[in-house]
Image (tube, rainbow, N blue to C red):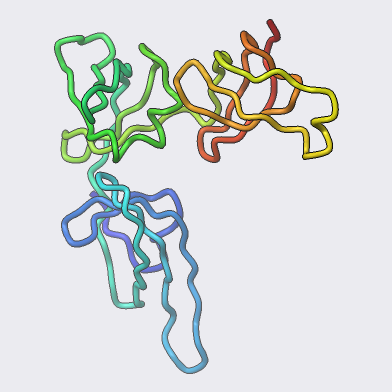
Amino acid sequence: MAILSYNEITQKKVIEYNGEPYEVLSSHVFRMQQRKPVNQTKLRHLVSGKVTEISFHQSETVPEADISNMQAVYLYTNRGESWFTEEGNPKNRFSFPENIVHDKVQWLKANSPVSIMLYKDTPATVSIPIKMDLAVTEAPPAIKGDTATGGNKVVVLESGATTNTPLFINVGDIVRINTDTGEYVERVTKS
């Protein structure tokens, strides 16, 4: 476990702050006139997902978090819990509260491969691919003249999530979704 000085706390690193694991979302080192440099950071708690802003001064250091990854499979979400199992070891099942992982799980269908970040050998958070290909299960028909309002419609995907797509998307089409933003990227195949 490495000790990071204030200027080594950079984006994508996972640090231990007050005994808790945090992912660094952004960092900016700046100096104001006669003062010492400060690293202004945005940190996301790995377990709760809560984002906080912390300033690290030149004299401060933090340990890098003891993080490892495990390949897993998404099973289902029921009664407020999302269940996963370790890939190749179906007996090792674990869950996360749905409200914490909902923004990621909404893009997953049953048996989707995911990566689980482990903090001190305990599941902390879920990582999913940036882009997912999902089939459209419900799409309202495009009506001539709709393009005056921008040319988008809301469709339902096989995972149950909804997203805005262009008017030419129909039921059965497979679309690529950016899971970070929830936006339509492209149509992969058409029905």
